Image (cartoon, rainbow, N blue to C red; front, side, top):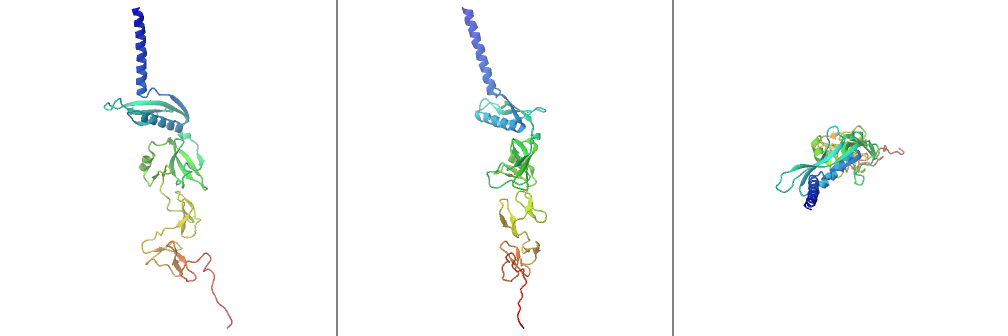
Length: 280
């Protein structure tokens, strides 16, 4: 019966070996390497980063989760760094594969409200931001909508750092999650900056500008010190005095004062000729 005992012992030893190998592969991140298919590249990348980050966070020793693709392939693979103990060396582990059918270069345009619809305000036209895991740019339309067009790549791993590296006046808007271009300062005749990085007709009273939230605010006085802007748009020299027939308005610019009462004329006031008549 000794031979039978040896057979059972050998079978048990093999079973234990299989368990140890499976445990080792799972520890290295290969035990969960399930393949998954996604319709778009952006969706595959988002799923990869989400799952790899969660897996690394669950480990005692894990860091630097990321997703990469081999040249010419259409799938992401997750990878990270791990180690077996606090004094052990770090080594690379892998997690899953995430294939896609349509790349970000084929992501269709979108027109509508931005992803910041629940927040007061909107992004400037030309802002760079993500949609469906793909990087793209938002352009303002003539109405309250915006159009997003893909740039061909996936969202950056660190959007804020990527935005800071762009320079040229671009700045990260953490509330809206976009990289905004510098505001437009010069517009064609009859238009003003709309607060979204573009120009729009000025629907505000003279001396005021349309703000991003749709309200009117006094136009800043951009004349040199000691001067003031007249209704014609020029800066008057001297001690900031207005020309004859003008007075300074609440917004700091010079307004017409046709009746000479020292107050800016109301719309239509002071335009009529004043005369008196009677019998000689």
